[in-house]
Amino acid sequence: MTHDDYKLLNSRRRTVLYYAISLCCVIALMVFASSLRPLPVEETITVDSTQATPQPVATVVHDGALPIADPDIETAGDRVAAAVIYLKRRQSEPALNALQQAQVAANRAVTKKPEGSKTRDELISTNQEIERVKELIRKGRMGNAAKELKHVDQTLDSVTY
Image (cartoon, rainbow, N blue to C red; front, top):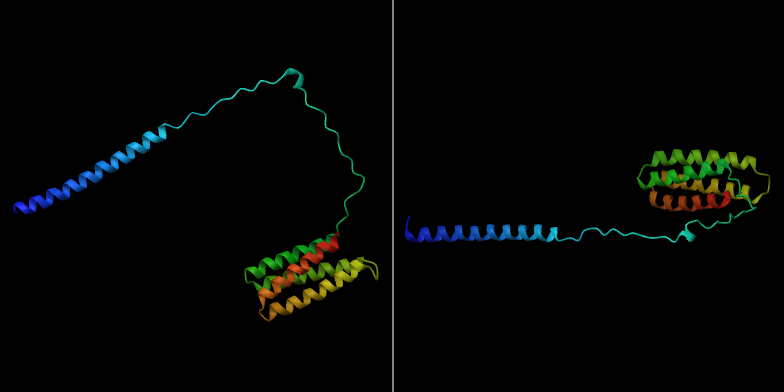
């Protein structure tokens, strides 16, 4: 090896040594900085003995009862929501099955409602919308079907209460 080769080799070693020393200094500085964190502060709170007893809270009595939800309408809404999830996953057969179950539940609810009632009419129109959505799914228009089903689900929620 020539003298120039030794100079080049020593300059590379020197550069590596400088980087190694710099890295060690940075690590040491980080360890030192992390040890300077303040310790958690403990606070002591003194309470006046006259305020130690809690104030009584008056209970609120509400005479109105919540409306009773029809379990068949609830089931129909749950199955429609399941169909929306299936459609988002691009699963048409489970969505169609869920919609069929929703229609069966809605039909049971229709038979319980008196003729000419607003709820009965809304349930019948909901069943017609579900049938249209099923046709959209069979045609492969999942996005439109999901949008329509969200509307059907909102309608079922409004019918329940």
